[in-house]
Image 1 (tube, rainbow, N blue to C red):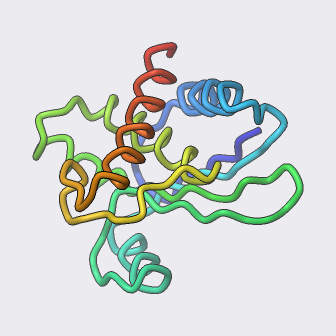
Image 2 (cartoon, rainbow, N blue to C red):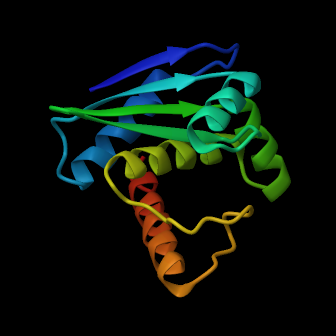
Length: 146
């Protein structure tokens, strides 16, 4: 169901991430799907963000969908950026890590918010706001069951 690769010194609770994946995939009727999760450094996620999104800065999470039978793709998370964001927005680090992972899974499943701006709490238009609100509601719903 989930393969986890930790390329950082971040201590992770594999059962927690496995549980989140199970809840989200079950809630989206995709229980048979598998995915890969990688934790990388700030430098590595910056390279990936530049290469695939043309943004020369680090980010908290990237999702790479693959069109393979029963394999959704890979989610790449930078714990260092998640920690910075949790401090910046006054959010518990563990909760933010869980939210970022659930958010990544939802992206792999096709949920999107195409018109992103720098601060994810601001949206450019009503359609984008509705899509973002729907993703946030799904995140809250799935994570409340953990």
